[in-house]
Image (cartoon, rainbow, N blue to C red; front, side, top):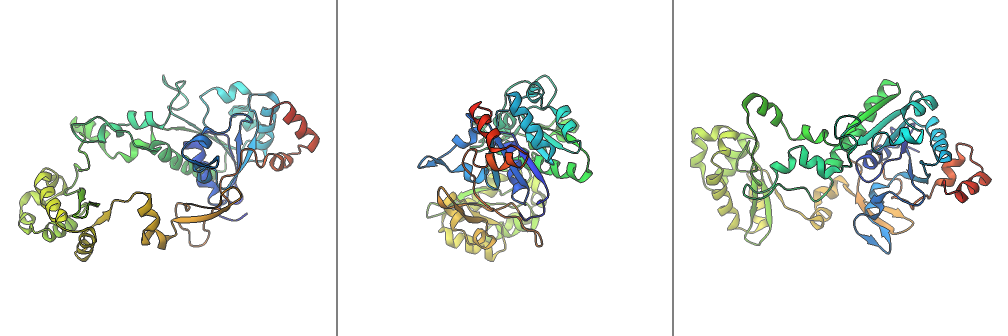
Length: 391
């Protein structure tokens, strides 16, 4: 096994997205990730999204670089197996409701008795304590509670949830980061990761603005309260492009390009916040210029002016884009079920110790025998455990 985390063993006993995705991020850089699932109730993520010939496609990405093992943790024999695996592991990631592992006899006390240096990441919707801790919850609730949904959508429309697991993804990144920080200390620790929290940081200074000014940020659609023009615009051939002017120099170039150099000298044009208060006028100028030209010309003229622009892609555009191709963002992976399958590459490039997709997500329980043999389970014992429904 190669990669900068090749000496790290992770037990992924979580389900769905935030916890499992955190384990995927670790596995992408070499961690030995053992994916523990219930023998009769696989991770529900295996049933999400499209499938081909009965093979779930999202799992090929979420389950990559993991060794699937089946154990019923609710049975005493299953709990003993988990403790045996934990004794040889560095990290355990779980996302059961608070108190569940304790009820099964594999809470932090028992896990740290088996392995005092184990890092235990507990990923839940609301955290391990507080009035909501015992509630069921998913990333959608975090997107609502954090203020993200209230900020998203058109001003006259309803709050809008994203069509993918945004809060889960952010929490997964935060969990992977927390695991690496905890490992750096060399001490056994418990990480309390509430999915409702990491997304708050990405929403900027809204809490401080409310504290100091009583300001509540409104929904502004595709516009920004911090700069203008910032929107999506339709071209003459019906495509959409996104324009952003987060820096003053870019804003000046854009308005000069679209034939409105006169506004650049206005006092209110000097800051992004003031420009945002004149978004109607600025949007009208940019929109009219873009609407009169085909997409290729629009993009070429913006690039010539060194102004920021991007086509609005669906997945077809992503796969075909030359920049993504140059970066190797989309990789083709050999797979025993699908033959060859494309998916997103690892998150970033390291010059000396790069990550890699070693294999796509495997079948439910594919590595049970191999992994349990590593902690002394014999063939005969494995057969008995299967007969008893433990694995």
